Length: 227
Image (tube, rainbow, N blue to C red; front, side, top):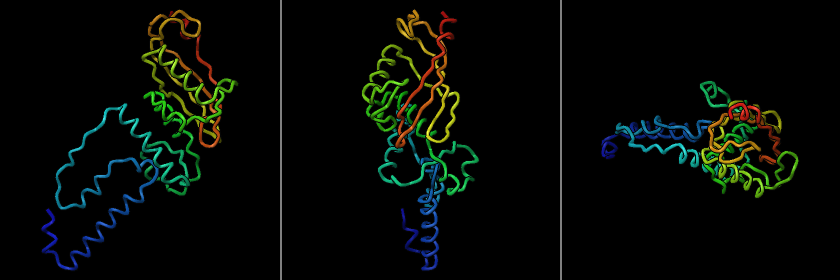
């Protein structure tokens, strides 16, 4: 496959080495959202040009993989600055030194929501503090997990969708939307499997990069109006 190297002159080999090094450096120096991006430019440095035969994982497996990859960065680069930029065309033009000035609580929160939606409870401690409090009551990580497990047991099709997300300092505010079918009684209401839509307004306090306090208000009236 690499027989072409045998006929290259010394100057050509040096040029090829420099081209490959430049491509590897571009990949190495990726930061922010580009860390988990597709890098076909690096592959294009090879002489053969076939399209890579890739397999794309389904969303649940992909999100679990993203969470695990993000966790590996905590182990491999614990001192790297955390960024709060949303992904978009503008993020590619943002200077790394500008991004580094922001704390990345919004991305931590999105990882937390992905953890909930995949019910990957083993990873919950990555996002939630051991001493977490819920609506003023300290429940701890184990109590918080049990609460979430009860939620999913009582609402088999439960899914958390972020409608609004604001991050400032050590706090995150989020408006979550739900479209699901709670079984039996939910919030004291006889829903009994009827499909309902409602919202939840939640404020989170972070400590040591993890959720340490949660204040939640669910729009119970919206559910009542659908029964």
